[in-house]
Length: 187
Length: 379
Image (cartoon, rainbow over the protein chains, first blue to last red):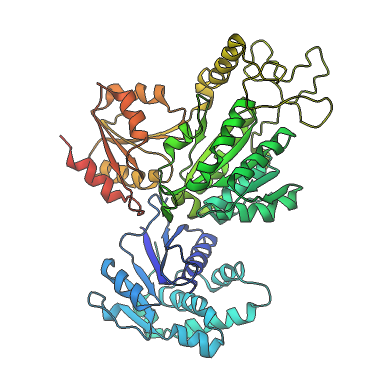
């Protein structure tokens, strides 16, 4: 079974890296993963989306057409990508955003990802790591160790503590009830 | 040594494969979506005793690659459409002077700066006819991260064996995707060493071709005796000539070294072709959607197969021709306005009808698009 994940936001928010970390952790756990991205020519700003496909089987088509999971960090990206969700898809969006028609509120978590990165972790640029922590808590995709290892490979040395804090803070945003309700792994 | 599965990007696999193949010189001018290749070469080449240089532009980087290779070092450059255009003149110089090298083109939407971050396969014909004049071309195109690693090794091998520039025709789909891969042990790879001659025997001519061979052994430029390298038609001494007989012999040899070794050069991937009545023909990253579509079509009871040139130039004419008797229809799928389909039609002319599905908007053709096209004209 393919499990299609889309990570979206504004260029510079680190959604591509978030998708890479999830893919890397999944590969470390023996799954097949293909990661790709689409963005404009801007270095910062502009709609940015990244995609990770997970499967126990060989993955041929590399792109996401009907995501089973959507992360949206901006209203733009939420509005655009909430239109093409698969049935039963889980959406995690930043708390400040308005859920568009078409997204199922019972399958959606509006979490203060940006605020947590800024106020609790102390660096807004850790928002993508906060998001990764929340995503894995909600979906139960990979082990905590695999996720940490995925993060560790992509951060400058000396920033480990801040990133572990971001991962933990992200996980704390998802309640046990929400996690039990939404949890689903790519089988 | 234990091999580990890692998540790797296509561009990254290109660099690691090139290094495994013996590439020790890279000159380039970074351009999306090939930039990671330059970045990684800058990091990795010094670690293996190689050299990286960012030149002032693509013309100069192609010249630097030719110069480095002439001195005896396996050399590579990488670019995308606009830069590929700029490299063309010097690629022709490499064809004429028979300087092995690998030119990676990670295709993006053109013409001009086009859609810089979007996938395309619009350089297929440019890979063949980009430089002027009749010239030999080998172009290979990978469809996965693992294949990128293995095929770039083959690109270097063919380049050394036939003393000719080899175009490594990637696209944004494969260059920018990351996949879990287990790379082969570099010790298990077949690596063609450069066939070097120091001309210390009876034949001191630098372009002397022994009986039964297609290419002269190469003498590292700047080591030992002097010789001449030129883009002009030349005789065995390497110096220019206008003698029609000498020129004809040179041009004929340049073309025949490829044309007479097609079985050695051409590789295809053919899936479910034995009983297929319909073939999806595609290359590079497009094959990923095509394979999904072919599998779904099979599940629906349609006899569809996939024919994928891995060697995209020379076009696998014989291999496709062999498949024609069983086919009722060919659907060629490309991320362009119809380029390889011209080759497919040339081969299938009068035998099998050829349809085309293409795209220019910068998005990726999906399996549903291909299935739709397969169903639309199903008899």
